[in-house]
Length: 124
Image 1 (tube, rainbow, N blue to C red):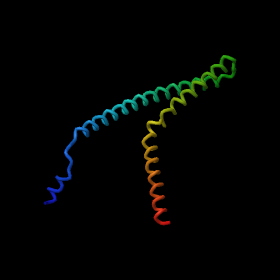
Image 2: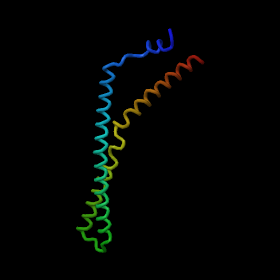
Image 3: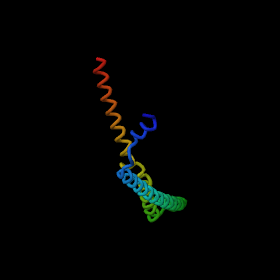
């Protein structure tokens, strides 16, 4: 038997399942891309609002007379800025983005512990 013949013996025929899985992966990537685009638009909008609120806060702080209305508006601006900061920080580290690395760490960490136990029992 030649090398080419043995190569063809070990090759697997293409499966329909692999095409279906590939199509599903493409759909998942497209959904992720759409989610990313949506998040990018939201971040841009939040940053623009944040800049506007900061500008307004700066204008109010420049005012020499802090009337109760100005103080109330400053408190409201502070609250709005806090909400925007939370929105900008959220979804950067969601469970979905950490799920795969987490399970890889669990799998390989567990595998390392098992290998360590086996080596210790063989050595000891």
